Amino acid sequence: MSASKTTIGYIVQLGGIAAFALGAVLSFHHAAIAASFAGGAAAFYVGKKIRMLAASSATVAASSTNPH
Image 1 (cartoon, rainbow, N blue to C red):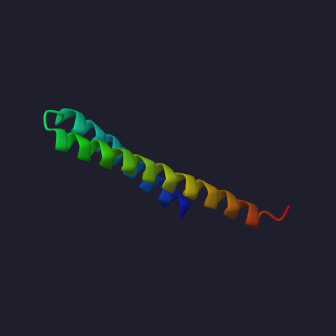
Image 2: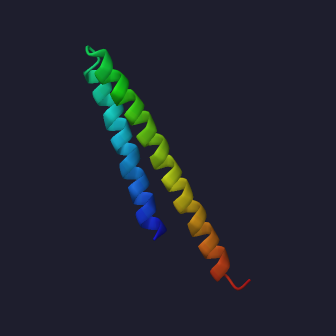
Image 3: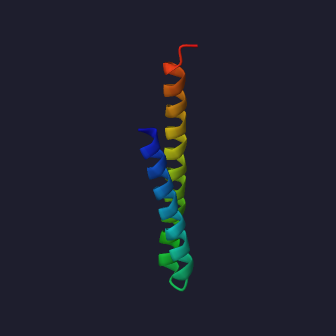
């Protein structure tokens, strides 16, 4: 389960980077760059949080199944 959350986190982060780059390409329109930068930054942050949650749940699951 955590592997899929990690993958989703990577995909969301890549989407954020793409949106941020698109904002730079569309920078001649101020509204477009603002929306792309904000959306890209938000997606990058959300992707990072998803990956962090996946890593912490994997750690908890591993420690709960370890009999030592």
